[in-house]
Amino acid sequence: MPSVIARPASPVVTEIVALWRLAWPMLVGQLATVGMGVADVAMTGHVSAEELAAVSLGASVWSIVLVTVMGIMMAINTVVAHEMGAANYHLIPHSVRQALWKGLGVGLLACLAANLATLLFDHIGLDQQVNDKASRFVHVISLGMPAFACYRALYGYTTSINQTKPVMVIALLGLLFNVLVNWLLVFGNLGMPRLGAVGCAVATAAGMWLMLAAMIGWMRAAPAYAQTFPFTHWEWPHWPEIASMLRLGLPIGVTYFAEVSAFGAISLLVARFGVVQVSAHQIALNFASLVFMVPLSFGIALITRVGQALGEGNPRKARFVSWVGVAMSIAFGVLSAAGIALFRWQIARAYTSDPAVQALCVQLLLFAALFQLSDATQVATSSAIRGYKVTRQPMVIQLVAFWIFSLPLGYVLGLAPAWFAWSPRAPMAAFGFWIGLVLGLTVAAALLTIALRQLANRRVLAP
Image (cartoon, rainbow, N blue to C red; front, side, top):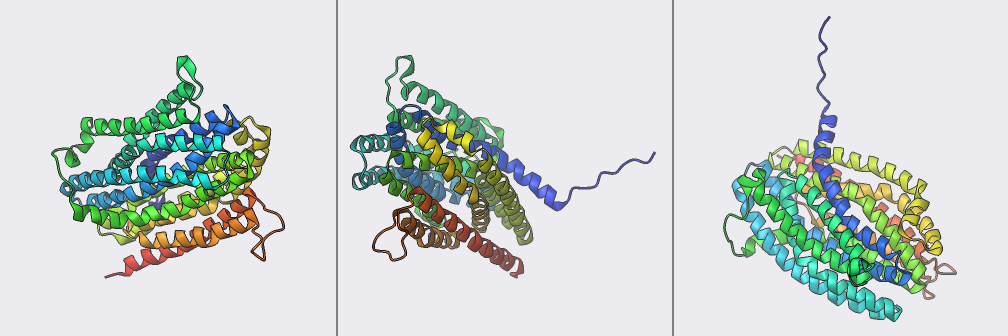
């Protein structure tokens, strides 16, 4: 009987497997990291509506700062990926050391910015009790920001040398720590003080320092880091190197800021409609953010794969990798849209036991389902573009999409200002803002897809 010769896998299947192997540990890690915020919202939701509102508002400010820092620190991903592709292993430790100095500075500035942002709470008509609790939440949780920024420097380094398991394991440990400390401090179990929203902040801030220490420990122990280990000697800041990474990272940070600040601004504007509106909005947004971690993980993996291909001097491979990653992200967007629409009641009940919040949340989750395809497309295309070391173009597109299209439309529909001739007769509250979000994400997805196509083709045709 003749032997059966296995056919080699197609290039598309091979790339899907390679991208998935790189992405899935990051996905678990990202889900665990976002799970900390989910645990904060879900656990305080079972204390009182006021505690939930305080965490929701505090988290809206905190998330803007956190995600902006994550974007600024993402420059190290592209730098290390290109050096890996070019086999310049000896250059990587210096870049990582400088990224850590950058992270320390960025983290301290972000801590200050988060605390200053709480002054906004005095001008949006909040109940004073909610205002005080939300402010204390931000004051405490911001103490973890320097650790987070430095952790993201090491995160970018380890994922770009194809070592993604540590980020998964460490994030899972961080989530377990967060839930345990929440259980102790939010509810006052085992004789601990009942701190409510502030207990969540203590758990998250302490968890960030723990995760940084765990990452350093892992790198010291694992042989995979021996060739590029950054902690062989002390090195002072090298300002030209840091400035170069800031030029690459700041546009990414602004890009992330453009999107997340739009969501955060909406949370602050919705707050004037009461606890039910802001709580339902935050639950729907929190769950959408959790789902977003899947295409975001594909995107981070794309930065590595595209950067390594370009480091090898292979722009055709970079273009191929880009579009396979975008296709994977879109496929997930279709599945997530269907899942959110089908299970929206179960999602709402998992977050809160308040019937009024549940009823409104279910309706907002339909909007979340609607923008899944656009959201998945825009994060994949923008990440692939960053793999080319192009960061300003995505920044401009995101600013246009969210601050020229999304927020103005949401403001008009949500608040129905009397001065605008085409305002609706009555404010649509959270619904109006979510309509604006759907439009903004759709505009971003379309423009970024065009930009990636032009960039990838231009690099292939370049001499």
